[in-house]
Image 1: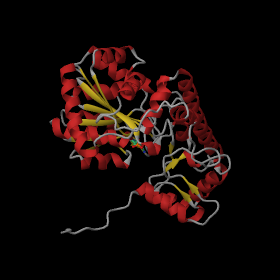
Image 2: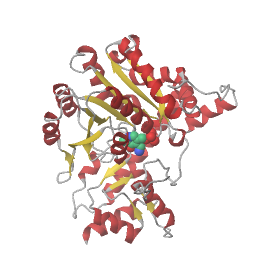
Image 3: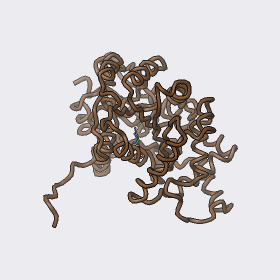
Image 4: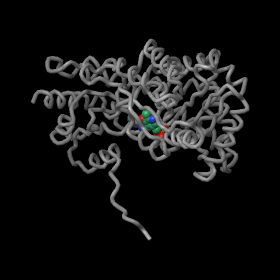
Length: 410
Ligand code: PMP
């Protein structure tokens, strides 16, 4: 029989969208969910994705809808591995030496869950340090997989900058061998990334405390407008460190998603990678990943991965996709400057907005101010002061900025 079923707390971000839908105000603005919208406020199917789908259907590139293997399609896995690791000299060596496990997963969330489950089964320390704040689902994913979340300071609300001193101090005292979750770029929710020098400091403590890094890469491309350049900072540093000094960084994981940068949200397309110095270990882990995934969801979906395969393997289409990513990034940056320009700088310092990258703006607005934006202006952002910039366009940027000015003035 059922035992004591109570209502679960609603998902904060998705709950916000429900409130937005119910709001009759024609001026309402949805700044909650992190999904891209075009200048008209509409979801956007990337032209490169449409073309890949045309090739699949009209040109008959798609031969069947058979099940893909447990860890995903082989051609997808090798194309994505090459795309992520094949652009730097150490990554290339890791591929050639078969030192990377690559598995197709149910987008970024599935990737995080699979690695968390694997670590819970086979890794000694079941504790994962995460930035404060982080994407709220990170905590749930790891907790539900049996890994206890712990926090490292990240954002200093007083100065709207990276709290690097306290971040390093906390990691310096971290439990030896614990897991640490890092956002590769376009940190969610703050939009604030570590600089190259700060990454060096962070990686130094990671090696000192023998932490196991899990890099979450959900917004690849949106920091610089170029997915390959976005890999630069952390992935390049880590492949180099691991290859040259495996004793310093024996292993690390990377969770990747095509939800945002290909707009494949509902297609649930992503990958998990695990790098290790021993190819024998890689074989064992691969077999254990299969044993883990088979009873969970058997195998990943195949439509999104076919789109990715077509785009990554077709030079012309790949170029066109890079153009689409640049277009998204440019629009987000235009919105960011539009918002900045229309804010009243005599009321508050907004310079941090200009330092942030990606889909989000962490405004520094308090919970009360965010609630006022909701009640008085029908502007729906999360309580922590985060705006999803995709909900803003030329049509409403003034309205949003003036509402913020009004709320701040009170
Ligand atoms: N990581 C971060 C930081 C995210 O913001 C998201 C999406 N909001 C994800 C992972 C996972 O996204 P998905 O499962 O849609 O790929």
